[in-house]
Image (cartoon, rainbow, N blue to C red; front, side):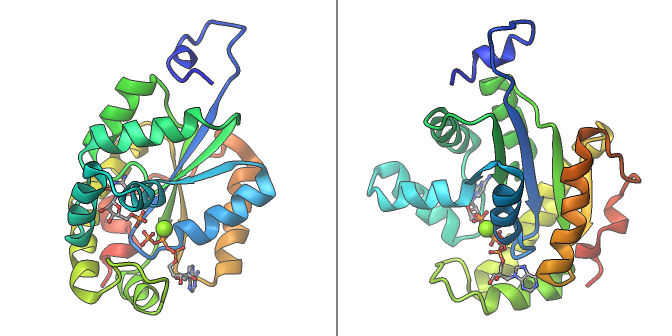
Length: 217
Ligand SMILES: Nc1ncnc2c1ncn2[C@@H]1O[C@H](COP(=O)(O)OP(=O)(O)OP(=O)(O)O)[C@@H](O)[C@H]1O
Ligand SMILES: Nc1ccn([C@@H]2O[C@H](COP(=O)(O)O)[C@@H](O)[C@H]2O)c(=O)n1
Ligand SMILES: [Mg+2]
């Protein structure tokens, strides 16, 4: 798949690639729900955090740099993240991508748009209270280096300061589909199924920072 040529929207020969971004605070359930969405709706699930962790495992210099940033709960420079994401997408012959944990800041948005010339169909936003996310992360038990209380608090701060503005950006474009992610896994998936069944014309009421559950501590 040539992700550059996909930007030539007029070309009938180009296969239309559909992209859905999935964002939400750390522990909001992005990975959990993406697995279900991919299975039920035929998407290829790409977790950007997982792609970055694979780069760490490769033992490269870039991986070492990523590991340091992740441990601090900060964000990896967008040129690195988007290059790795684009490489992962190019290796897969799929028409539908579910991109989990992306974008995390405005720099991510710009780098993705500049490099791929693509935009998401919509952005699924898992809105979850912070105390619930903290509880989930502390009992996740998957051996992640960043699942400790110190790093978790830093990740929450990054989410508030850097990711919420991207949610507002996509809200202004009418692309946010928000679900209450504080409920049980099954209940959250029920709300998500409605969104994926209705497709891109399903509009939800506008949100603002003040209405996010993640801010009600
Ligand atoms: N709705 C839910 N209710 C209770 N526990 C949940 C729910 N959704 C996910 N979990 C659990 O919470 C933990 C975090 O979920 P998950 O890994 O899907 O979150 P995430 O948003 O991908 O987090 P991160 O940003 O850190 O990758 C996991 O142990 C998962 O099993
Ligand atoms: N767009 C992104 C996504 C992730 N990161 C870094 O990876 C960490 C883990 O991400 P998860 O989605 O698995 O929680 C995250 O805390 C960041 O350090 C990133 O920089 N940019
Ligand atoms: Mg995850």
